[in-house]
Length: 193
Image (cartoon, rainbow, N blue to C red; front, side, top):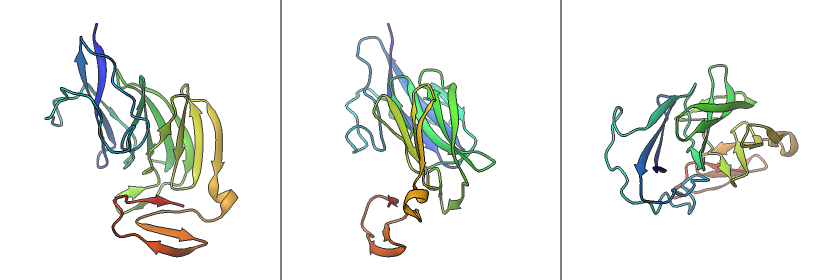
């Protein structure tokens, strides 16, 4: 019996392509989940061994799934589900659920509208998170939503309707419309307030 291990997620900003490299092993247990940006320990590492160390555009991937737009978000994985946000050509902001084994899109939902870009980022840059029961996604438009794993919306809020102006920005915190503090040494490129 083969067990599928999640070993690499590559979300190519330039091409709108999600590629997952998988390794198959007959003698080990299933790999852990990757429920958020930078993984379960928030440090970008995992305890897996014997992972591929080289791959290219044509080798080392179990599948590639084209998506409609660019995103800087990290795919998150729970069991057999991969969740990733992406804008489409009509500037809808979508959450995609992809089958980890096949790369097939299981469902996609429009969470918000109004994609725009700033440098290499867009409104789909924030990564989703999951607790294993629901997936939560926040877009730069302030659309914040939860879905169950079948794609049913559990709730949706537009934070700017409740709290006023909303922004995701590089290395700065805005409070009541003014820059409160600039953090040039932060490793994170986006801070949401």
